[in-house]
Amino acid sequence: MNFLKLKEWFSQRYDLSDIKKMATGKLVPVHRFDFLYYTGGITLFLFILQFIVGIILAFYYVPHPEHAYKSIIDIVTKLNMGWFFRSFHHWGAQLLMVFAFLHLFGTLLAKAYRKPREFVWFTGFILLGISIFFGLSGYLLLWDERAMAAVKIATGGSGAFPFIGGFLKAFLRGGIDVTGDTLIRFYAFHVAILPLLTVMIIGLHVLLVQYHGMSVPLSEEKKGYGQVPFFPNIFYKDLALWLVVLGTTATLAVFLPPEIGIKADPLAPTPENIKPEWFFLFLFQTLKMFPGEILGLNGETVAIVLITLAILFFFLLPLFDRKTSRGEKSPLFTWIGIGYFAYFIVMTLVGFWS
Amino acid sequence: MKLRYSLVSRRTFLNSLFGGWLIAFFSGSLYALFKFAFPTLGKEPDFVILKAEDFLHIDPNSTKPFAWGGKLGIFFKKADGTIMAVKGVCSHMDCNVLYKPLEKKFYCACHKGWFDEDGKNIAGPPPRPLEIFVHSIEGDKLIVAKKGVKVELPKA
Amino acid sequence: MKRIMETLTIFVILLTTQLTGAAEKIEVFTTVRYDQYIIYESLALFWVGIAGLLIIIRMKLKEIERVQKLRLDATEENVPSLE
Image 1 (cartoon, rainbow over the protein chains, first blue to last red):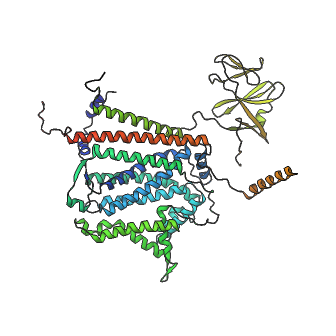
Image 2 (tube, rainbow over the protein chains, first blue to last red):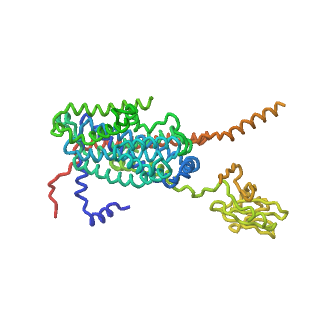
């Protein structure tokens, strides 16, 4: 294998020296909080793993309500290492959500969303929404009792939106109730629509990060900081972390394979104590806190409206946080950030233990 | 004998070690992935279901082939009327065997191996007898199964 | 007599399970001891592989940092060439 000759052949046709210079010139700041930089890369790595494992699982999964459940049982019991890849896909998804939230709150508290990086925050936020929908749609595909109940609750919540609620619920469910049509629709989302959107938006997100460079927290900017080249120093550290994440996911997959419950029956009553996936718990708990009726208005609608406003505010945070955009300390928004983080953690735990 | 200068540079050593280990690691992982992605290569069924009427009424001392996954299965009615089902694959080098009614033996053309009426290897290179299947009749169906397999019929 | 009672009890139990449609738990992990050991062994081997890679990466990083400290990797900008 004469690599030199191949390089010659290629460079006679394409001049990549500019791209190479950009890549080798990429510098990463070194400071007290630079460990936060790794969270995005790990989330990306988990996405890639999920794509690969998801593709081979798609060879065997049958997205029809009559056969879906059985196809998963076949994957788990009959195929070589099928149980492992399904379990790996489950745990990959769980870890992805954990790191996505770590990445979210890391960038929030480090105020990396400030000018000029507002669009990195916006695209990232959209990616979070996509990940959550990935999780929900994937969960239903098992078509067991628990999955169906969880999706009934999650899509039912969407119906509480004022004006658009009914339309949104019908769009997600493919009808009035969660039925076989919902399964097929969620499958289309999970394997076609969402992956395409994800690839495009991750591409944009990562491109913007390259354009702007890594953000440094205001306190560290003032102190001054050194820089280190991405290639090869940080690249190898990234690789090492990604390998550990791979090993951890595989270990979780082997020791804690997810259950398969009873086959879903749209006509059966909802089982007791149904809870949605853990990353929905904070929303679920919040909804539970609201009484049935407030000042003559439907309690659930009020709850949904307030939650939507809170999320919208969160989404548009870079535009509201003027002080930080100017490079000044903003204790108010630091506390707002901590507030969102604490609320998420507390409500998730409460939902988990109740 | 101690060398004055190293045979390879530090860079070459590290890069070869890294590359070699990476290749070994990922080829192992990818092998597992591919085994899952290409499952039916070499896999045989646990049992097959055939139409009884197609097979039970063949002449004595004759055979009728059936599909056993991708391989040859032979339904055999002996001269005295007893029926048997065997895998028609020679135990030597996996060639398909042929029943010769005149000699009342199974013959493998590849290396001139011979099996008797009960599938036992009697002449030539085959080291083991032909694999014998367990057969049963349920209604209008003939079920041929691997020995030791619990047959579960789908609830049709 | 004892035999008859035993077989009758087993028969009744089996009958009830069939009639009430008691579902078996679906095994998501093999129950075969031999296969379980192979899986745990493979996982251990997998981690050995990862550990090896981590060690080699650390070796490479140390070497890179050594070279960078000595500035052996800096390229001179204005090298006169024969063009």
